[in-house]
Amino acid sequence: MHELSLAQSMLQTVEQALGGKRTLSAATVTLGLFSGVEVESLRFCFTEVAKAEGFGEPELIVNRHLPRARCRDCDAEYELTDVLMVCPTCGSIDRHIEGGYELTLDSVEVLEEEDDVPDAEKG
Image 1 (cartoon, one colour):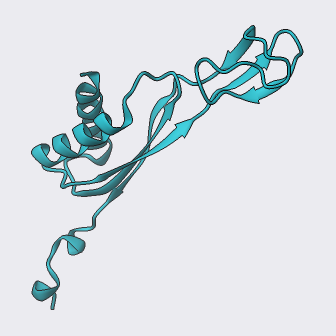
Image 2 (image 1 turned 135 degrees about the vertical axis):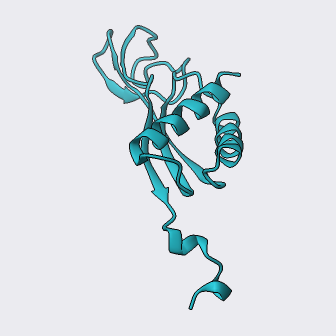
């Protein structure tokens, strides 16, 4: 399951960027159609690794990136929503595909230390 190693790598990147472990409320990633990542598996792994490594229990927000295709027969441009999708204009499968392999960690939301303290303990 490569989603586990992806989750570990993302959290290592977060730790390096923040200069240490912090409690996270969320992280946002962008995944391309051809990234080969199973979304629910990545969500599960990310949350479990984050919890085990001291990052809290952050939500993983996944934005899907759909690649663009240009038909080589009729020159139509379209968004590719499925790997086997044919040109919606002429039905051809001869196309040039741009993108779809993305896997980026876009942002993280860090809980401030005061947010970690239960309301009863706040003055």
